Length: 164
Picture 1: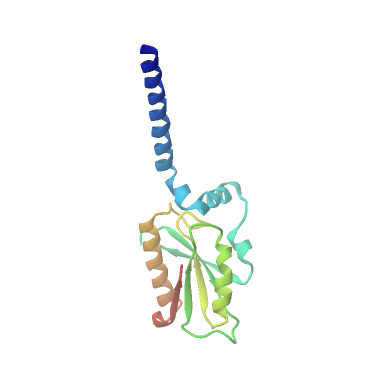
Picture 2: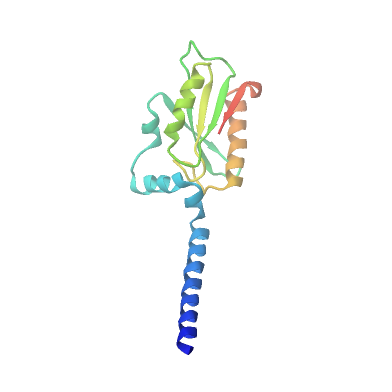
């Protein structure tokens, strides 16, 4: 009987350790789990593989905007041809949490048919945007990019399309 109790304590202890380590790993790696492209972005940044500018092509212009806290926000501007461009019409495109930003160029090209200049935003820690992704930082960046587009790029807030 003592052997059975000892064996059950041993199994219970092992199960507790496995459960504790699993929960700890999930907590520590939650950014990589929630934002899967973030890990790819880190690999690209530290090992030099891939470039968003190259993926998007030569018709896209890279812009950097500073956040109120001094972080660098990476934006890519896709403009329709001169003859189709409508003054003040713009689209603000936020990526999903998976896949490269180049997947969203299709949306920018579709909106260009309606005369909209598109701005594709890289979240903190993705591409050349500095920082670590979080809901609060993404919201701050969105507000800052909105201000940049409406003030510096002179987009009409009533004609601004937000995607994402």
